[in-house]
Length: 299
Image (cartoon, rainbow, N blue to C red; front, side):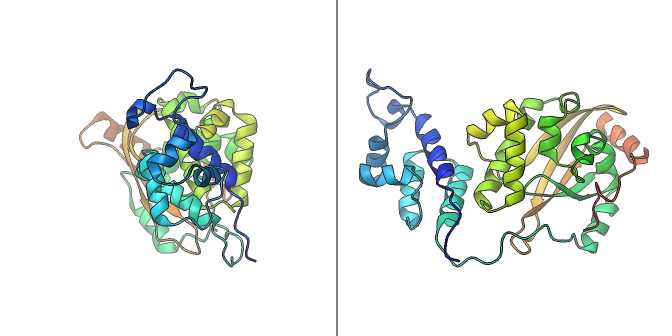
């Protein structure tokens, strides 16, 4: 089969949204008084990128297959894309190139026993593995205790697996649990958008995005913004139902890809000597809610 996934709508909307955010004066052009839409015109981007207006119009309509890396770099500079947006554009271009494709994107592969042993050997940090759709594939006891509201959520029991995006957008309890709910919502949508560029043929991802778009106005708005995020790290502030306020540092590390499936190991830890570390220690001794085989899969 020689056809690539049709991601022209994603390419069109992404490039148009980035063009709209650049003011003419930012690139040395007169603002003018007769502009009907915000940002640059297509022909202005074409001039900045050194291509013809007709060619750039075709590109912004989603016809990106066959475009050289040099031309894409010129568009990156013209639209002032950051590193993550640049990566996303190149992912879209790669996915759009006609090629002899193998089987559909594989299901999540089994988490190897040594990796599970590693997770369970971590006792003072919450650690879990998630896929690009933000499904939790496996976790240590402290991670399940830390995210107890998510594991107990109907969004988890209904689908047989905890998913950060479903819990964040579809369970009202998430607004009490995540203190920085708005920032977390934006991050979740941006992570899913990045995964959509990387895996446009992932049926489960398309279904998840469709579900969230149908049921959550906040997700629809964030999805339409086409914001991208690949790196996932920072500070997480939670209001836990058992130990109260927690401020944790989190870091995500990409695991070696197997069969094209990108998984990440995420670790949440507290600053040593703080009350947050004491709260984590308390959680580590707290009996986490029973996690069924469905919510803690053995693959």
